Image 1 (cartoon, rainbow, N blue to C red):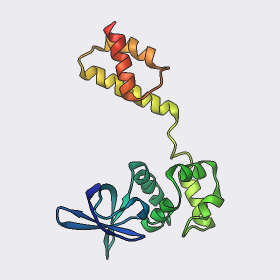
Image 2: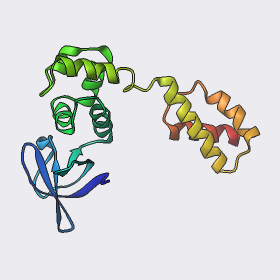
Image 3: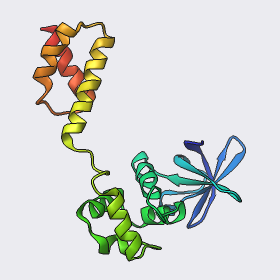
Image 4: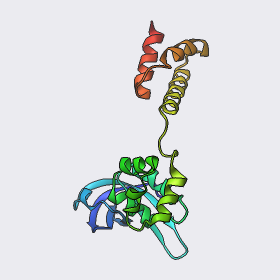
Length: 185
């Protein structure tokens, strides 16, 4: 599968971009023409759709957009073209908020979405799009613990530091710095 394409914009329209990668042109279904300009180098995250009669690429500006697309196409009756159109009409945050709050009117206003499909999107995805803060914190703490182990610290040294970091907030990098500062004392 092609995960991303990095190259120069050769041509584009309202629904596709042609990216030149070392003399090979990739045609990518892409619904953000406002982000494009000719001869500009850019990276587009891609989803490769394989059907009996066609192989196509769908492009996204960010990994968050790509991840939401993957979740949208998992909904019964929602294909890549409609999912891409949804992402072209609203931001990732707005779509996630509408799904999480059950705002069926917002979702129904998207192209190609009727009452049944809007209800199915909410039913299938509500609660699956937003990672709870506690899950994110525990994942970050696991990353910190793993990093400290890789640096050669013993479990007996790591455990007290992890207890102190349990209520701390910040990115994984910030938490690692805090942990190293505690260990240096």
